[in-house]
Length: 324
Image 1 (cartoon, rainbow, N blue to C red):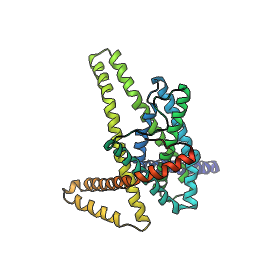
Image 2 (image 1 turned 90 degrees about the vertical axis):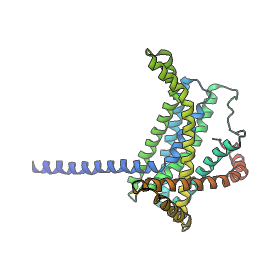
Image 3 (image 1 turned 180 degrees about the horizontal axis):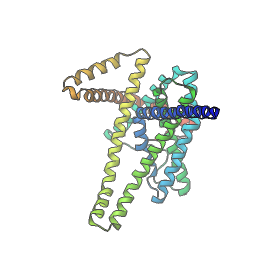
Image 4 (image 1 turned 30 degrees about the horizontal axis):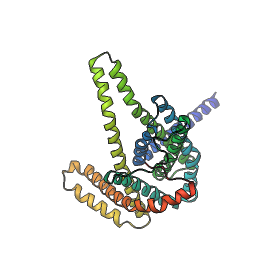
């Protein structure tokens, strides 16, 4: 009997350790996922454009198809690659993060440039291209998954850099949980966003109360403005996160003068306000300066990407990079 009690006690101890490990994985995944906010918001802002022109009944199946591709990208390709980097070439993480940060800066600056200097987008798929709708749906989903792969690579690299030093399996579990959680959050949000106008239309046409009908009409009118707001937030987040990644990467490589200046300027601005607001103002000032740096870098990268990288991309892959 005493042996059985001892065994049960050992099992209980193992269960407690396992539960603590699960809690650690969840906590690390949540913290690491928050670091990838800019890329995550951009992912959610970009995806709805791939649904333009399709019947409402096909929107959720297409989102599900893209989400499955995103999870495959993260778990089957990016997670093993991230673990290999972490364990065999950790010195590559900072340069890869900076490369991803530069991509975010370029994408954010390109969006702003398109607003300031309107011109035709050279997307791979024309909105009015004729052909079989099913084939077009497959091509649209494939294009969205390719774009998602780039953003997912940045997200997984950011998550990896944010995980405290731990065991191989803890890193793998944290990456998997954060990757799947972010995918569910992004595409769940996209599904809600793209169907919200249908919900509003249903309420406006079938609501029993005048208030319900009015709310439905308001929802239909508000969604285009909300989508525009989401695009603005996504662009700002890309520039902020991209700029911050580059500044931090330069510090890790021994070029910390820009980061030190930004920190000192943000500190000085924070001390111009009451003490209760110092923390928020310092963070906001630093984020704004990181974003301005990201925007400037992005504008520099636009001609490099369009005149050098895009032709090479087209020569290698047989087409132009999917435009946002």
